[in-house]
Length: 499
Image 1: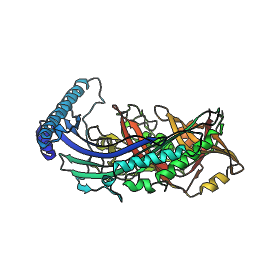
Image 2: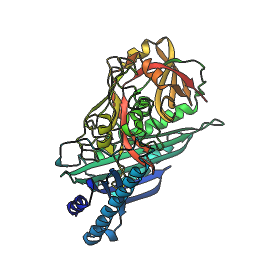
Image 3: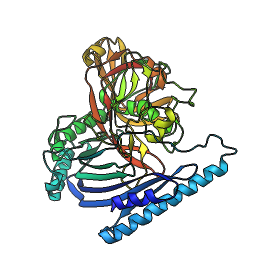
Image 4: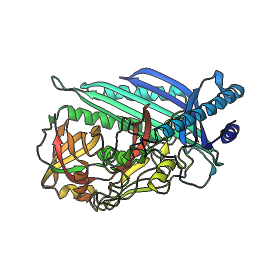
């Protein structure tokens, strides 16, 4: 049916390109709070998305739709797919007509051109030790109930304990008028922990964190970045939250201070000030909803490409071949995924792109287009986007600090529209005195100009890790994507934010 739909798209007048993505997502889940079951279930969703490039001044047309149980039989689905192709084509023609109409006073409007890639036909299989399909939902619920109850029982000051766990298989078929046919599957398992602690007459302290990977149920047994079971991870976060509930609030500073940021904190830091700004659609201002633009590219003649934007010690890249939430073999345009060297020794080298954006920038396509589900339009999305490993041990980095602060684990970001400055809160902040970790503070974080922070990095650790980020938002309508972010310990300068 998908092949026939592609043949139909090729037959339309002035049709230049089309692709179809058909996805099936199967998931089992459960959640509990304070030792009581709150929900469980199994879900299966099917959807498709169609892109057509057509018109005299070519433009995109897109149509996407979830498929219900009644519509999933072959006869009904064939009709829906045929209708979808026609609607995507009609939208492409309408968009192309409007472009031609406005061309006289908007000379920047041009044909959509796509960079060339090798046509691929391939099948990739989900990787797992414990097949998600064999895990009973009741077992997932029992685990969540047990852990959340034991979290609550750790101490009377634990006011709330929540656990969510899910596991499943995601599969997507991609076909294009150029002859591509790619069938990709991957497993996904994730655990979420939330805890609230409050000491008598004190302010409550909260923690919300995740562990997960694109693998099977073994992820929650310890095959993850923390090398901990979901239970051990939950107890670790519970004890940390209890400790913070009795800590002093951090005071803000008017001037920058020396800060050492740990890999977990740097996962959100690199996400916000390296990942999003190096997505080509944002940099070109062709997709700015919610996530905004990028200070790295004013236009094709005024930009930071080839310029020093960070310390020579800093290299950052995006690599879908690495293990993490950003792992895949082919992107949503059928482009083979590859490592993208974003910043090399402090110099901006490249943007993550798709076929259209690679043609605009005159770069090779690097396979960075993705969508949350098949019925959503593909966008440029970061993958496993990280700071590269360095040579110093974290202990050595801290020991060299006479007076500074150790920033541990990320919480909430606040970023300017073009990402030129940031404010990111931390779970914990420690004072560093004469090279040693000292007093613990709560409700703190750092703020800085993005370029200043990157340029001031004077130490890069050797403790590289990639952490799961399950809730990266971008686009309109909003798409929530799982990505991997991280790196090693860093040392730079920033102002402290406080309670």
